[in-house]
Image 1 (tube, helix red, strand yellow):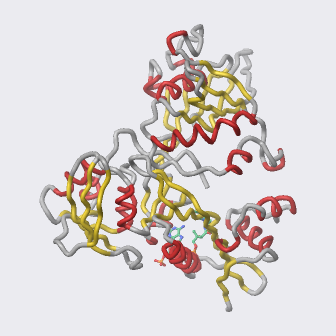
Image 2 (cartoon, rainbow, N blue to C red):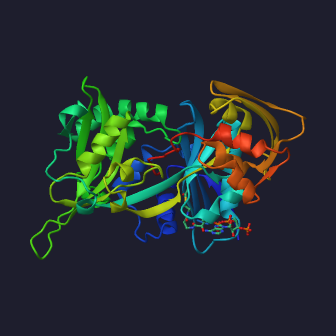
Image 3 (cartoon, helix red, strand yellow):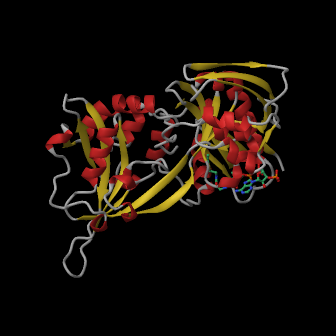
Length: 416
Ligand SMILES: CC(=O)SCCNC(=O)CCNC(=O)[C@H](O)C(C)(C)COP(=O)(O)OP(=O)(O)OC[C@H]1O[C@@H](n2cnc3c(N)ncnc32)[C@H](O)[C@@H]1OP(=O)(O)O
């Protein structure tokens, strides 16, 4: 069988997109409009497919992204998406071939990390990716939360105000707000103009699954836009003519904790809304503890979210800051050879230097574990106890734990 791996041309793109649908269990071919719309925003040199004769049987796409790391700097990421292999061609190494080609090109280009959101946990560890952020979704039983339904969401002491606005204002203020969120949140990934358009209804219709949400902007006392909540509500009345409506939060981002608190209180105090679904949050989100009774917040999802694969250990470790000063020698294993080596990290709260070294190692770990530790969202000691990090000098794991971890946990609000 002649299976050809190649980048996709404009004429091959409709067949490639059809194959993406097949991999994601959608039988109908994409409509003309969808093909045109997507093509206009796709760099075909980063779109790979495997063709069996005229039929595309495997798909893979990557694009430029920026990832915020601990301390607020952003590194260049190779974001991977639309990974599929048709059921007729699975488990013959096609994903392995496409991944190897893409990671080699990303390394060559100078990307610092590769990122993805895994459909299933077992797929990507073998390629050097580790889960670097986690997600929690809550469902709030509003009447049990202890919030007083008579109290307004915002009171004079908050100082700010909340306005319901149109999509146009979100496109105007959202990007600046998101930049400020990114500066204080490791794990946040860049959003381009198209993200803001598609997520405020520009160029999407009901046929694409779009329905208008509510947009709530929080402005601080000095008029600064510090927060945005986007939510949809359903229409559900019980037999006893009591409102049982659910608000589903699509986005809630804030540049300050005050805005974050105010927007959660707002969403949890809308008349008729008895259930709030939080959307994907960091596991240490403020939401449950904001409620007088946090047990009214039930965890409905708890899972890995953004996976990170380091492509350049030196630049990755030098890009972030650390909780304390320490020197660690890391022996990094990488089956692909893309990043393997021994590195001396001189870490500090102001930054770090990282250089290849021949000194003896303090810790030995696979690049997959380094990806998991990179954004500060895992304990080195826990990984050691799992047998995934080897401690070569007594106390080194505790030191690494103390310097890599963060106060608030990393969070990636987006899916791609
Ligand atoms: C970032 C994203 O786009 S996430 C979306 C991922 N896509 C999907 O989940 C859609 C449905 N699944 C698929 O399309 C395919 O099964 C894929 C893409 C996940 C895997 O493609 P394949 O070509 O079958 O993978 P390939 O043969 O290269 O597998 C390499 C290794 O990974 C293993 N592997 C691949 N997929 C899985 C899986 N879902 N679970 C467990 N192991 C897996 C294979 O067994 C193989 O292991 P081996 O080398 O020990 O034999």
